[in-house]
Image (cartoon, rainbow, N blue to C red; front, side):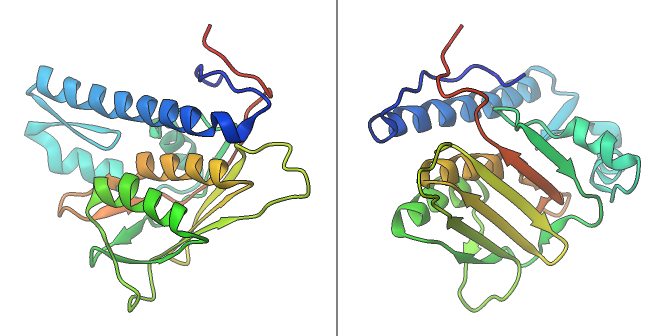
Length: 212
Protein backbone atom coordinates (compact mmCIF):
# COMPACT_ATOMS: atom_id res chain seq x y z
CA UNK A 1 0.00 0.00 0.00
CA UNK A 2 1.10 3.61 -0.61
CA UNK A 3 2.36 5.48 2.48
CA UNK A 4 0.07 8.25 3.79
CA UNK A 5 0.33 11.66 2.20
CA UNK A 6 -1.10 15.08 2.85
CA UNK A 7 -4.73 15.84 2.22
CA UNK A 8 -5.58 16.80 -1.34
CA UNK A 9 -8.83 18.44 -2.34
CA UNK A 10 -10.45 19.48 -5.58
CA UNK A 11 -8.48 22.75 -5.83
CA UNK A 12 -5.22 21.30 -7.14
CA UNK A 13 -3.78 24.69 -7.99
CA UNK A 14 -4.34 25.89 -4.41
CA UNK A 15 -2.96 22.78 -2.70
CA UNK A 16 -0.24 21.78 -5.17
CA UNK A 17 2.64 23.41 -3.32
CA UNK A 18 1.72 22.07 0.16
CA UNK A 19 1.47 18.59 -1.38
CA UNK A 20 4.85 19.00 -3.06
CA UNK A 21 6.44 20.20 0.18
CA UNK A 22 4.97 17.21 2.02
CA UNK A 23 6.37 14.82 -0.58
CA UNK A 24 9.79 16.47 -0.39
CA UNK A 25 9.68 16.18 3.40
CA UNK A 26 8.99 12.43 3.13
CA UNK A 27 11.95 12.00 0.78
CA UNK A 28 14.26 13.99 3.06
CA UNK A 29 13.16 11.98 6.10
CA UNK A 30 13.96 8.75 4.23
CA UNK A 31 17.38 10.07 3.23
CA UNK A 32 18.17 11.34 6.74
CA UNK A 33 17.15 7.98 8.24
CA UNK A 34 19.72 6.32 5.98
CA UNK A 35 22.36 8.71 7.31
CA UNK A 36 21.27 8.04 10.91
CA UNK A 37 21.67 4.30 10.30
CA UNK A 38 25.17 4.85 8.93
CA UNK A 39 26.24 6.97 11.93
CA UNK A 40 24.65 4.64 14.49
CA UNK A 41 26.31 1.61 12.89
CA UNK A 42 29.93 2.56 12.07
CA UNK A 43 30.62 -0.98 10.83
CA UNK A 44 28.38 -0.25 7.87
CA UNK A 45 28.32 2.42 5.18
CA UNK A 46 25.13 3.27 3.35
CA UNK A 47 25.22 4.25 -0.32
CA UNK A 48 21.85 4.77 -1.97
CA UNK A 49 19.89 1.72 -0.88
CA UNK A 50 22.96 -0.59 -0.66
CA UNK A 51 24.15 -1.36 2.89
CA UNK A 52 27.72 -2.67 2.94
CA UNK A 53 30.13 -4.02 5.55
CA UNK A 54 33.34 -1.99 5.74
CA UNK A 55 35.38 -5.22 5.69
CA UNK A 56 33.82 -6.34 2.44
CA UNK A 57 32.53 -3.06 1.01
CA UNK A 58 33.95 -3.40 -2.49
CA UNK A 59 32.78 -6.98 -2.87
CA UNK A 60 29.28 -6.28 -1.60
CA UNK A 61 28.91 -3.07 -3.59
CA UNK A 62 29.98 -4.82 -6.76
CA UNK A 63 27.40 -7.48 -5.99
CA UNK A 64 24.74 -4.84 -5.45
CA UNK A 65 25.69 -2.86 -8.55
CA UNK A 66 26.05 -5.89 -10.81
CA UNK A 67 23.73 -6.16 -13.76
CA UNK A 68 20.55 -8.04 -12.95
CA UNK A 69 18.88 -10.18 -15.58
CA UNK A 70 15.96 -12.60 -15.56
CA UNK A 71 14.90 -13.64 -12.06
CA UNK A 72 17.58 -11.39 -10.50
CA UNK A 73 15.64 -8.35 -11.69
CA UNK A 74 12.95 -9.24 -9.15
CA UNK A 75 15.58 -9.44 -6.40
CA UNK A 76 16.80 -5.99 -7.31
CA UNK A 77 13.28 -4.58 -7.28
CA UNK A 78 13.12 -5.59 -3.62
CA UNK A 79 16.13 -3.36 -2.86
CA UNK A 80 14.74 -0.25 -4.60
CA UNK A 81 12.82 1.78 -2.05
CA UNK A 82 10.80 4.79 -3.24
CA UNK A 83 8.55 7.02 -1.11
CA UNK A 84 5.65 7.03 -1.83
CA UNK A 85 5.71 3.49 -3.20
CA UNK A 86 4.83 3.68 -6.91
CA UNK A 87 1.63 2.06 -8.08
CA UNK A 88 3.56 0.09 -10.70
CA UNK A 89 7.33 -0.42 -11.02
CA UNK A 90 9.09 -2.81 -13.37
CA UNK A 91 12.85 -3.47 -13.19
CA UNK A 92 13.93 -3.96 -16.79
CA UNK A 93 17.36 -5.52 -16.12
CA UNK A 94 20.39 -4.80 -18.26
CA UNK A 95 23.18 -2.32 -17.63
CA UNK A 96 22.77 0.64 -15.32
CA UNK A 97 22.75 4.09 -16.84
CA UNK A 98 26.11 5.47 -15.66
CA UNK A 99 27.02 9.15 -15.70
CA UNK A 100 30.74 8.55 -16.24
CA UNK A 101 31.64 12.13 -17.18
CA UNK A 102 29.50 13.69 -14.47
CA UNK A 103 27.57 15.60 -17.15
CA UNK A 104 24.18 15.19 -18.79
CA UNK A 105 21.94 16.77 -21.39
CA UNK A 106 18.63 18.17 -20.11
CA UNK A 107 15.37 18.85 -21.93
CA UNK A 108 12.67 20.68 -19.93
CA UNK A 109 9.29 22.21 -20.83
CA UNK A 110 9.72 25.42 -18.80
CA UNK A 111 11.87 27.24 -16.27
CA UNK A 112 9.63 26.00 -13.44
CA UNK A 113 10.61 22.37 -14.08
CA UNK A 114 14.22 23.41 -14.74
CA UNK A 115 14.43 25.16 -11.36
CA UNK A 116 12.96 22.09 -9.61
CA UNK A 117 15.45 19.80 -11.36
CA UNK A 118 18.44 21.92 -10.34
CA UNK A 119 17.23 22.23 -6.75
CA UNK A 120 16.27 18.64 -6.04
CA UNK A 121 18.42 16.53 -8.40
CA UNK A 122 21.52 18.55 -9.21
CA UNK A 123 21.55 19.73 -5.60
CA UNK A 124 21.96 16.11 -4.47
CA UNK A 125 24.27 14.70 -7.14
CA UNK A 126 26.31 17.75 -8.26
CA UNK A 127 26.03 16.49 -11.84
CA UNK A 128 26.57 19.11 -14.52
CA UNK A 129 24.08 20.06 -17.22
CA UNK A 130 25.95 20.52 -20.50
CA UNK A 131 24.21 21.29 -23.82
CA UNK A 132 27.28 19.94 -25.67
CA UNK A 133 26.74 16.46 -24.24
CA UNK A 134 24.59 14.11 -26.34
CA UNK A 135 24.18 11.33 -23.77
CA UNK A 136 23.10 10.58 -21.10
CA UNK A 137 19.96 12.64 -21.59
CA UNK A 138 17.16 13.43 -19.16
CA UNK A 139 13.88 14.49 -20.77
CA UNK A 140 11.16 16.13 -18.68
CA UNK A 141 7.80 16.69 -20.33
CA UNK A 142 4.21 17.54 -19.48
CA UNK A 143 1.43 15.93 -21.52
CA UNK A 144 -1.77 17.65 -20.50
CA UNK A 145 -5.02 15.90 -21.30
CA UNK A 146 -8.33 17.67 -21.90
CA UNK A 147 -9.40 17.36 -18.26
CA UNK A 148 -6.37 15.94 -16.40
CA UNK A 149 -8.34 13.65 -14.06
CA UNK A 150 -5.09 12.66 -12.32
CA UNK A 151 -2.90 15.78 -11.86
CA UNK A 152 -0.33 13.81 -9.80
CA UNK A 153 0.16 11.08 -12.41
CA UNK A 154 3.56 10.50 -14.01
CA UNK A 155 5.48 7.89 -15.97
CA UNK A 156 9.20 7.27 -15.59
CA UNK A 157 11.53 5.31 -17.87
CA UNK A 158 15.27 4.66 -17.71
CA UNK A 159 16.06 3.03 -21.05
CA UNK A 160 19.02 1.14 -22.49
CA UNK A 161 19.61 4.10 -24.82
CA UNK A 162 21.16 6.23 -22.05
CA UNK A 163 17.96 8.19 -21.69
CA UNK A 164 15.68 9.05 -18.79
CA UNK A 165 12.17 10.21 -19.72
CA UNK A 166 9.79 11.56 -17.08
CA UNK A 167 6.30 12.52 -18.24
CA UNK A 168 3.79 14.20 -15.97
CA UNK A 169 0.11 14.85 -16.62
CA UNK A 170 0.71 18.27 -15.01
CA UNK A 171 3.65 20.13 -13.46
CA UNK A 172 2.63 18.53 -10.16
CA UNK A 173 2.92 15.05 -11.66
CA UNK A 174 6.30 15.92 -13.16
CA UNK A 175 7.49 17.11 -9.75
CA UNK A 176 6.51 13.73 -8.29
CA UNK A 177 8.62 12.09 -11.00
CA UNK A 178 11.60 14.27 -10.03
CA UNK A 179 11.30 13.06 -6.44
CA UNK A 180 11.48 9.48 -7.74
CA UNK A 181 14.54 10.34 -9.84
CA UNK A 182 16.24 11.85 -6.82
CA UNK A 183 15.72 8.65 -4.83
CA UNK A 184 16.84 6.28 -7.61
CA UNK A 185 20.32 7.77 -7.98
CA UNK A 186 22.97 5.54 -6.37
CA UNK A 187 26.70 6.27 -6.18
CA UNK A 188 29.26 3.65 -7.19
CA UNK A 189 32.77 2.91 -5.88
CA UNK A 190 34.44 5.49 -8.12
CA UNK A 191 31.94 8.19 -7.17
CA UNK A 192 29.99 7.83 -10.41
CA UNK A 193 26.21 8.24 -10.31
CA UNK A 194 24.05 5.39 -11.58
CA UNK A 195 20.41 4.72 -12.34
CA UNK A 196 18.85 1.26 -12.70
CA UNK A 197 16.82 0.53 -15.79
CA UNK A 198 13.25 0.81 -14.52
CA UNK A 199 9.80 1.61 -15.82
CA UNK A 200 7.38 3.30 -13.41
CA UNK A 201 3.78 4.41 -13.65
CA UNK A 202 2.35 6.15 -10.62
CA UNK A 203 -0.84 7.96 -9.67
CA UNK A 204 -2.92 8.23 -6.49
CA UNK A 205 -5.43 5.49 -5.76
CA UNK A 206 -8.04 8.05 -4.67
CA UNK A 207 -8.79 11.69 -5.40
CA UNK A 208 -8.59 12.51 -1.69
CA UNK A 209 -5.68 11.38 0.43
CA UNK A 210 -5.00 12.17 4.08
CA UNK A 211 -3.09 11.19 7.17
CA UNK A 212 -4.58 8.31 9.15
